[in-house]
Amino acid sequence: MPLLGRTANGLFWMQRYIERTENTARLIDAGLRLSLTNLSSEPDEWNSILVTAGVLDEYLAKHGSFDPDKIADFMLRDPANSSSILNSMAAARTNGRMVRTALTQETWEALNESWMVLRDQLSRPRCELPVLLGLVKQRTALIRGCFYGTMLRNEIFDFCNIGTFLERADNTARILDVKYWVLLPEHSSVGSSLDNYQWGSILRSVSALRAYAWEYDAELKAVDIIDFLILNRRMPRSLAYCYRLIEESLVYLARTYGETHECHETVHTIVARLENTTVGDIIDGGLHEFLEQFIIDSNRLSDEIAKAYRFYH
Image 1 (tube, rainbow, N blue to C red):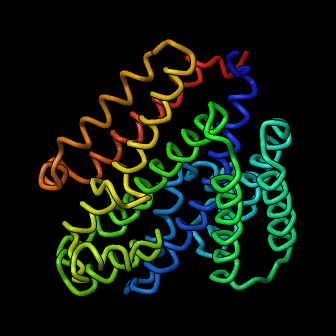
Image 2: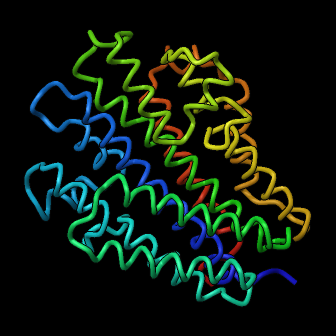
């Protein structure tokens, strides 16, 4: 019997919001690390967070001018920002509570407890930012560990898995885009030690610095980092890895329900494109342009999945 659309919707969005919580922390971390290399008085790296998170208009409507402390607060806890860490975690818990009977006890308890811990920490006006971001990443990792360690690999798992990796791929693309926005005005810095440090900061922000060193002998090169975070099929936050897992879960759903949909064709097309693209192709065509199109395609895939599995019925 097919899973009810509203249950599939709750599972899908529970996992997307958990992943969004962690990745918003990673995006803030990217801005924080890049700000340490900013030699001007302009907070370009903080502004880029708002652009890549898609909340620039909402921020400007409330604050009108750019200020690092206000930007960080807006991304952490502001009610006006639907993608803030506080709002994302609340949405994850709401969706989790709605589908609680589809989750193992361990998964639900980890989610519920993590929401309460983070809500308490975010209610405190003074908290060291790196410590808070570390707690967010730790708590979302706990939920993920309980989920992958206890859930049956059925259609419930597949909808959750699709939500996780769609959100993760989208956010890896957005974190990479931070680099584009920060360096755009300073082409002369490309290839410099400052440039390499900033790329290293991006790797640290997605917890990939050591994994990168294993794969590329530790030397930081922009071309290798782009290859690693977009095309490497063994890096768990790369676009190629995420889409391989999305495709796998959609194939399982097709077998479970005995039918395919438009979303299956779309995911096969995106996976094939990632497999047949080289890092040289990406650079020649423009990193920002590649990432922008990827984000558009991911959003379309998300809409097609919602339509195919009747999320709103």
